[in-house]
Amino acid sequence: MKTLRSIKKLKTTISNINNLGFVPTMGGLHDGHLSLINKCQKKCDKTLVSIYVNPKQFNNFKDFSKYPRNLNKDLKILKKLNVDFVFIPKTSEIYKKKRKKKLIVNNKKKILCGKFRRGHFEGVIDIIDRLLFIINPQYIFLGEKDFQQLFLIKKHVKKKFKVKVISCKTIRDNNFLALSSRNYLLSKKDLITAGKIAKKINQFKKQIKKNYKNKNNIIHIKKYLIKNYPIKLDYLELRNEKNLCKIKKNNKFKVFLAYYINGVRLIDNY
Ligand code: AMP
Image (tube, rainbow, N blue to C red):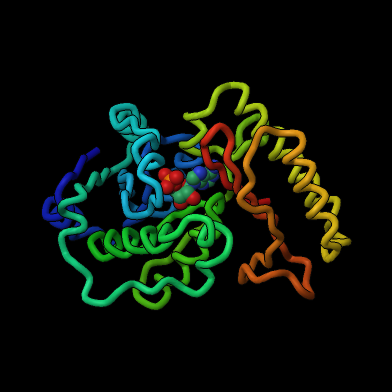
């Protein structure tokens, strides 16, 4: 495994690879990340994983500084997996070039996390755009766990890059909680609570499939969550899974959830 810390070194190392797969991460690796890497290794000749906690996508400095970081452990994991390349960019280098034109994120940004985390998706698209420009991979692997992010990146790259986006299923723990680096910040008790919430919302989705237009359902479940669990809810919404619009005719919808538990923000979709 080659660890690359400069753009120049990265470019010379990967210049002759024809079938390169890219897995962007912020580190704090878990089995969710590993499933993306596994899929990448099956599909591509070479796999490149990036580890970078992107300051631009954090709308809150405290959240950025307490984000779980464990580079040595991550590198050991990646080495064991036989990943070919790890890219660890430096902020001063990756953001050195200023943009001539402001990046415009698709108009869906003001919903769900785009509404509750101002500037978040602009930061995400900015870094992905920079990384894709430098790496120029054939494939990029992204998780459905961050469904709105996946949706916006797909839209963005379609216009600008040749890369194919491969979406990967959400990996969950034994309690049905979606794996996330932020889970490392939770106590055992909070992890159990978050698992119970995940199961509850999954059940809720199954129950309302036939009667998804009844607004009382969502009001009721929101009240239930707030009353029974120590959480601060950002949103719980049903949205069309193709375009993230509010659901109208068809029932191909997903339930989107974001909440804080002991100051840690978790998101999921079902
Ligand atoms: P992150 O390090 O949180 O920025 O995530 C890096 C990539 O891993 C993103 O494409 C995420 O959507 C994906 N990912 C994170 N958690 C999971 C999970 N539980 N299952 C599948 N993919 C995930």
